[in-house]
Image (tube, rainbow, N blue to C red):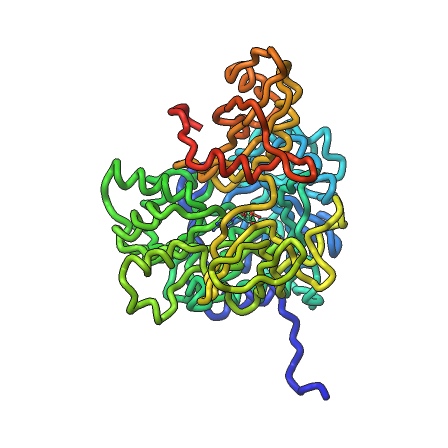
Length: 545
Ligand code: AMP
């Protein structure tokens, strides 16, 4: 027997409608790309989103079309999120830090019909445009007065498009499983893979985002995502903020600028901020150098890479609570967060801090387990270490267009995260390692296999392995371990120079170590695990990454 409760679809459209009705005067404040601070309200944003939805219709958008964005965290990007999804198209947020071939690949793979871009990406788009046949128009996110001189074919001005349209829109009644957004994530091998979000997944994630033992977001908060809107929807905050009536503070392109972050926190009363450790180290450095405080800030969500204990202590000294979090593009992204259980309050300080330093606990909506090599579930005893698998209503069930094979999903609907973890008797997870051979530098992936393939192309290199080694500023940086051919003389400087022009500059390994033997696994693969153990605690030379 079915119950008699309404089956209203869970739609992104309803989030902004709700904010417009219930929190019309709550502000969205954003640092603009050109400089200066823009402010408007959820009511204003709703109207502009209606205009944008009309503009997309006028451009010929049909349900399911992909709309590409190359943009920072600004109010216009926020509007794009809602106008695309609400109208039934898909917002494809593109990471501008990928290198040109990858950008070309994902735009073509997604078959984006339009590219909405900040003025700062016009040069990049011009260089790619001849290789992007699916793009029908480039919409530049600026006023008419700021329109750059550009060779982009069919360049349109965003504000001009909006000005020509009415400020109400008849939003379609969509199926909640309709695709709403697309974000590509780098894989260990092959091309980036597309994660295709749904209205339902995004709405449920935005609800869970706010729970007290998650981010504890409410209308008493001002939230500042210092994680790009092209990184898993800025961790879901642009959806959660209007849903819960929180003020949204967007740092624009200046996310690594401690001065900008500090002034946004203080001027706008930011109570909660989110980002990768590298961002927060920049803020702490700035505070140490210039002084001042961050008084309004109550808590900071740090994830994307393991959070160093020293960073937690630094925030604590400013009266800011740190919530360590773990997630993935494939998980919308929230999966694990660290808030203390009530029984910890009676524990000695040292033991409490040790729990804070763990990755955190799960929450309703994400089931997790750790398994051994034969997929047997391992106990939650804080000792057993295994592959971390998850499933839930905001976890991706397959990659877009199934490209590149998919051995991450098993037959029982579990997704293998590629991370290795233990789980203790309190349900607290500790991520201990990673099975995927990727290096995460400042929150961005570097492909180790690509680095190795390039290295073995250099004369005198017999075998090479690129491994992630902890780095005080970037979280991890690549270390290249090389076995030379007999009698070869190739040295570090030659090898590092060999990378110039072959990969983005920030991918180039920070150092090269020459060894007599590279360890291998039973199946003959390079044992990254053995190498990571050998070079754990590696002391970087002083060269800046
Ligand atoms: P992405 O899809 O780019 O968000 O990357 C997700 C991956 O980042 C995870 O699978 C982990 O390998 C890593 N990661 C995210 N958060 C953490 C964390 N708190 N500690 C350690 N690794 C993390």
